[in-house]
Length: 350
Image (cartoon, rainbow, N blue to C red; front, top):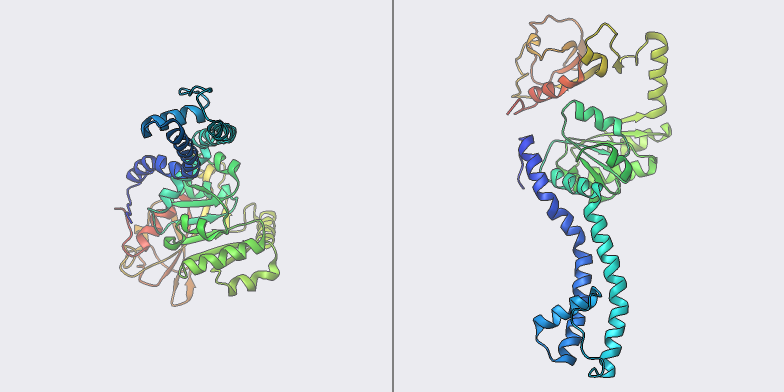
């Protein structure tokens, strides 16, 4: 399987492959049309004693109701008339339906979006898979430059996202999970309307990729232990999350440390994006391993460092990170992708 870290190359190959993916969707209709033409051609060959090429030519004319080849009615035996009458009745309706389906498929924007997303998902790794109707998550991942694939059955949502990272299908289906590249993903976010659907998706995700990090949003807090026992890395209890955020806003005019909105005096970029809190792990052999905090990308401030299971806010900018450390930063979320790369083994710009 070809893997590439060049986004431009990925975009080009994705566009070139889309027609082949769409064509595969049309194969059943085209096969049905071919069967009708073959049957009609056989009738012409049997009764009219014409060659194969002429029979196919005559069959296409009959099936499309153009009638380019019309044998003399008086010279036709009754059996042939009955065969052709039945074929005309069957083929006209079938042909019309098939052609309409083909045209509808080719001209439907979401079909091309889906085709491109499926190809892209098979050629990326360590990406984020989002299951459910959460365009806000997609927008944030886009803004932070994180590669992702979303799976949703909502076609109107797919059309509204204006990108080619959306697979249109059932988020709980193993077939669609495979299509989204769950087996090579780094993180799977599950945010479905039904907790039972979320549990089904979680179990299938875990079966396909036991090591993937899974973040699940649930509605019923009583099911927290069920999801954790089923392999969820982190469970977001929606009502508690919203409650804590709103309570935090009442006290501090922000989301209580989850997402800090910038002030009007901040730069335009930060007023639009807000401040985020990011958590990262320093892996062995990464650029962060042995790096001083002052070397972190501009736009973020180190808040806490976890070492040997203990968080400490007491450090200087000359403090050096090492393998196994946890790092908590505050700042522009668009910088988080760069930090994640330099803290990962083999990471950093290619």
